[in-house]
Length: 249
Image (tube, rainbow, N blue to C red; front, side, top):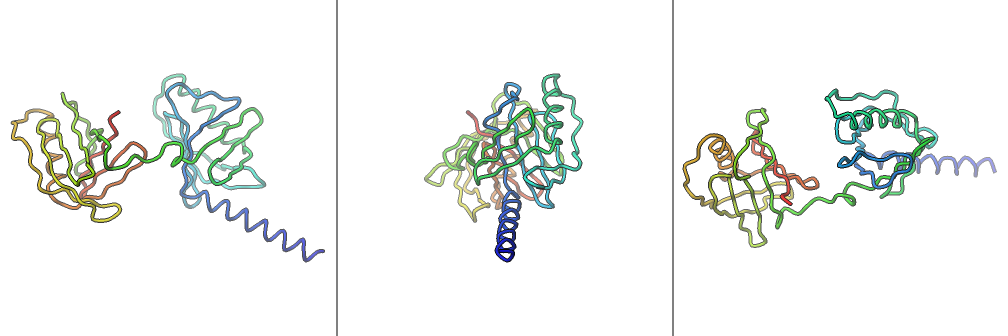
């Protein structure tokens, strides 16, 4: 009997460890709540990383810290947070979230859903890939959101937002916000693509339009780009130059 109990304990321990490890690299989006209501227009997300580290936020300040799973509870020994100025309702939401996550809520996880339950609230999350799946590269109309060059991030106001549309036939429709045209694209690997044979109009651009136009042309000048898609966001990177596109709904 004692040997059986020891084997059972070892099996349960290995399952618990697997559960803990399986959370790493996963992100979750809040889909249901009892005793808590999200501020309209915001979303609550959790992300589990190595070390192990947990990050979370609900639309204003981001919070993170090391975590442990102890006797079925999520334990955060210390929580770091950014110090952005938030509107009053977001600040209250951040404060509530900080308190809830620091209260050692009970945690359950079933491969798709993660539930955190405290004394006064219950939060149910769904895997981010299921709640907000990545959009496909092909067929989505991608609109410029921001650009970086030389490590500096910039946002430019232009009359017409630059866009890219990749098509099934291997063509790509390009709008730099000033010039328009087409090119061809090929996938060099699962995370790399190359745009070639670009033909654009030759409109003379001025002001911010000229800056954005030049940056996008340089990005699409034939070098192999790294691309990443997360939900409705596409990142195209060559060396230290980056253009972030968001889906245009």
